[in-house]
Image (cartoon, rainbow, N blue to C red; front, top):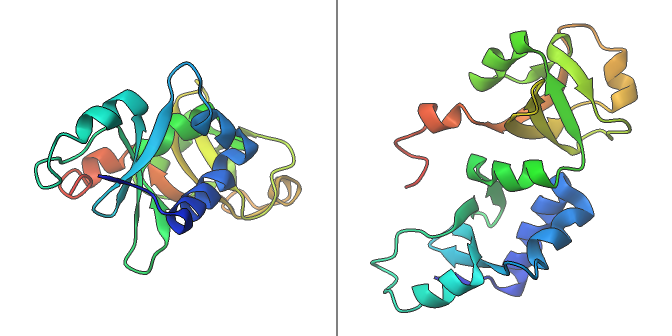
Length: 181
């Protein structure tokens, strides 16, 4: 496990900023429980600093994971967030979309968020911004990218796509064999 390089840190922070904006400072500057970002193979982990120091005594081949996997780098150097990052994204989310009960199952099966399923959404969401999808009971279900701004979404047909799904908690079941490998 090693620290992220300057370029890797920039790529990770840009992706996180798309979903949580300036709230990224709460992830980095937490005086109560300081955390660090670490890279193991191609995956980025968010780890408590004291645990990261203890992990240095374990060989790289023997260490499988530690902390929370935020995502992984693709072969082309892009960073892709995993569903395991959802608790942190939901906690500091900038833009949110709440879906009705009848829209939860289609979303959890891997479909995009339709206007007919939207219960409410944050004001002033721009187009192509990162959004966190919640149930009407405020349970985080996943995240994605807004396909339309809030104003444009209000004028959509009921079958129009409001948010493009990036990840949802249904992935824990659909991809259980490959999620952590």
